[in-house]
Length: 306
Image 1 (spheres, rainbow, N blue to C red):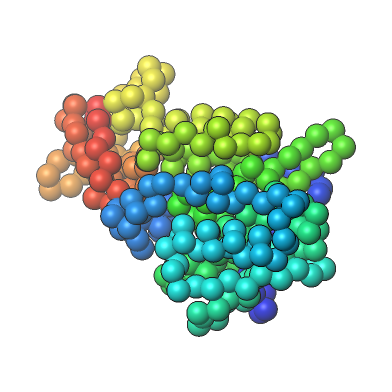
Image 2: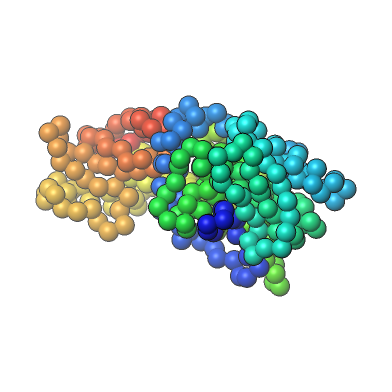
């Protein structure tokens, strides 16, 4: 949550919300990231933050260790001139950062991290991403959506697997950092894995995090199997063909409720628009059978059967 004094990453000891309630905002955040950084800029984050760079043992000095992890996150997010000063205090949220002109930024961590050091990297990843977004001038309207943007960018740029790994849940207690649900973190992490041919699963120390990643990956796979993409399943292809016939018979008819595509007419003939499964920018292709298209934003080549 953000207020006049800074930006904060939330933690919860109450029952954890599951599922995909913020999915549309997450997708908008991925699109906004590609638009701001460009394809080449996003590709500059092809390697995730290594587990060893975020490791923090009970034998490490608290302040020196926190500074070391903060520097690793700063370097990973390509903020070479951002110096993080890390402190600890009693506070409602898990962490917060003062956003100013820099070059020094003051990060405060909840006192509980003094004895829960394994999650310090996760909290710092979120806060340092706030600094990155501040410098990029990248934001979404409203506090809630901006925090979702921060979680999404942290994860897509290779440091947010730490936030998912901080999720732990059993019959008597639970812990989660960030504003996304565990499955939404898994979804964004899977999107990154597909884009960079990366498998983050060996990095998880939390079994619940791995389960959430698996659920998010299944949801992300559905994005690449929606018509008019050629990988769509038989039932979806049948529905698409029915909607296409309806649109051709009644030009201008709105798409069926819940359909991931929309048929359009234009000077070049009928077309269909849909979201790119990588960056979620809308793409329009002609309705003329097998078509290959390239997304102009993320350069993904898409095989379509329109």
